[in-house]
Image (cartoon, rainbow, N blue to C red; front, side, top):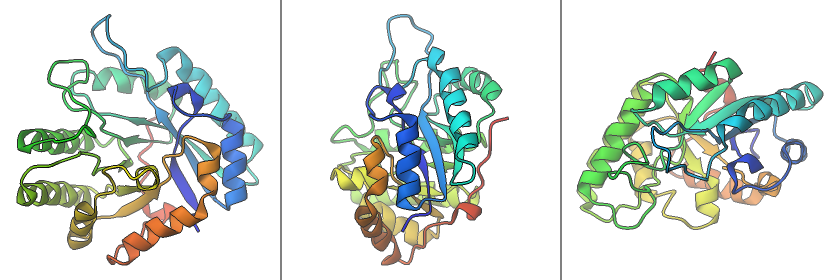
Length: 262
């Protein structure tokens, strides 16, 4: 049974359902000891005609923080609640993002790199799009490593989200480099329950064989977009077994450096 989840969304991202309180009560019912909210963070693109609608708007961030902090106090005797964000690393706008979230005193952030480049620009593509080739995979790995080097991220969500159909040996080479880098910087890699449940291109078995060989730290994340997702103990146990059979023991919450943004 899971005892923590650091990957929980809210309705503010426009593709999740359920009130914040419902996620907390579901987590308590599921037996979780720690629940981290990490909704999709606002971004600050330097163009007026583009905004991705799978994340909260900047004007929602303060209310989000206040809601989670209030629940943190209300349920303090029942569960540990943490305030975070999931966000991409976009070189052009990252400093502005950090300036924006710092006053919220986040407990942590996780990187969920859904695009490369800076998203709005011509060179950006959704990483789960089918048929990525060598140059794209190399760009993904390089950008993720650069983002993790900032020290701002607690872990890397769905690191194997790239739907790659190129040379298998090149995939192994690139992802081995990523896993070794994460290990050297003590950054866990997430086995994503939502991807597993929905039979997406991730979790990728080849990637997790690489994690096992490199000895990189791993976590399991529900990537919950509904409160009910936190109650699916059976799917959690399947994911846990997929790691254990490779010799990977998921990290405990005490083994994770939250790297709060103060």
